[in-house]
Image (cartoon, helix red, strand yellow):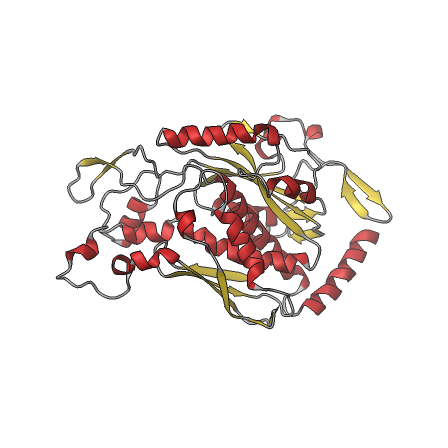
Length: 390
C-alpha cells in the first residue's frame, strides 16, 4: 500500500489518494469521519476546530460499501476556504488589487518550516511554505489511517493512541492493559488520558501555558493488539518494521522523539531487565513473559502488542511570539502569529494511531498479499497455524 496527500491549510480541500487496498474491504465514509472527529477534539485546541467539521468524501475506489482494488480517493473540504479564495487562489494575481497580497508573510516563525522552505523553494512569500507544512495536513493522514484500520479489523488487529504525558505530568497506565480497557476511558477524556487522577492537572497546565501566551507538548503512545509473529524482516535494514514505525511517527508535525517498548530506558538497565523470556502454550503458540521490547525483535513483530511512543514538542506558534528577522529588511521583529492551539497532544495521539495503523497494514499486506480479502484470509489462517505449531 502507499498513499499521497495534497492540499494547503487554507486551500479548498485536502486530498488523499491510496493505492494497494485489497478488494472486498468494507469501507464507508462514516468509518473515516469518526476518526477525523476524534482528531479535532482535545483540550487546548484553537478556534479553527470550531470553524471546520471535517468530513471525508469517497470519490473513487469504493462501490456499494466495499473496496474494488482500484485507487481510493478521499476529499476533505476546508470550510474556511470561502474567506481565503483571493489569498490562496490558483489564478494569477490582479496587479491592480493590492488587497490580494495583504497576508503575505516575510517574517519566519522560529520552530516552523518557514525560513528553510522559503530558501529551498525560492519563495519571498513564506505563506507558500506554511500552508503546506501546517499540521492541517495530518487530517489527510488520519483519513488514510482510517482506511488502514478498516483493513486491519478484518484480521482482529486493533490500534489505539492515547496520551501518556503533557508537560511534566505523567499518567500511570497498567503495563498489560488491553486496548479495550484503554479505550473505555481515553475516548471520553478531554486530554485522551487513561489516568483520571492527573486529567485535571494536565488541563491546568494547558490553561497556564495558554494564559501565558505559550504552548505545551507531551508524549503519546500507540498500541496495536492481535499482530502475528513475523511482520517486517531482519534481512534488510530498510524493511525492518520497527524502523518504519519510527519514521512514520517522526514524520508527524512537531514530533522529536520515538521509543519502541521501554525505549531509552533499556539503555539504563541490565540485559536481564530488558529482554523478554519466551514461553509456549500448545493452544496459543509462542509468546513472551513480558513486553519490554514493545512487540519487536530483530525488526520483526514477535506476537506481543506493539507499543510505540512519540514525543511532541510544544507548538511553535506562540501568542507571546519569539524574535525573528524580516527577510526583506533584515531587521528584527517579533514573529507573526497564525491561528494556533496551545496544546495539540490529545489530537496528536489520534494522528500517531493513524500512521502506526498504516505502517502495520502495509507490512501485513506485504506478507499476506493485497489483491482480495478472501485470498488474504486463507493465507493468513494457514500462516497462523504454522506459527502456532512451529
